Length: 169
Image (cartoon, rainbow, N blue to C red; front, side, top):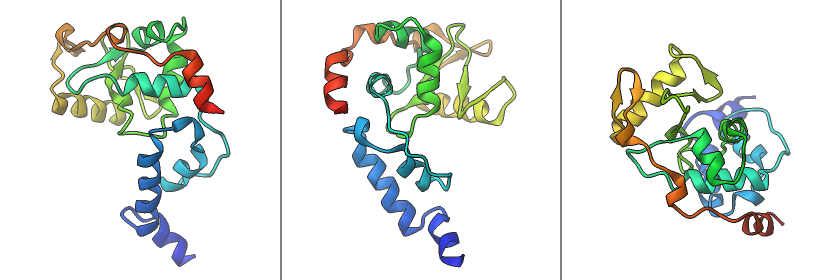
């Protein structure tokens, strides 16, 4: 029991090894088990793998520059998907944060949307998301992200469906 407590303590050798595994795995997230990531956070393990769609979402999200944000809808459009909520669900399950900066994706109305599965203006998770974005240089006006802080992912390159599918196998 005590050794398990030490292994789950933040900064423990086991956690550092697992977090290193996550950082290295970002280059090929389709082959990384979310169970390993969940274990590093002390969560219950799962054998669920990252899907090809999630891989494409994460790769696109990594293209959002520091100090900028994109919307779930813009991300969906850039991926050839008509479901912004699918993008949100993929980001909710993001096992590669902060390497995949899911905090840089917001709602279409320029409000923060969700963070760590929480929504609602007063949630502590959204307060943390806003603080991170402000520290990165994102500007806010009247509680919403200012337009000059918005990045359109259609201007960047997007992994093709064929490339994401071939890297998943």
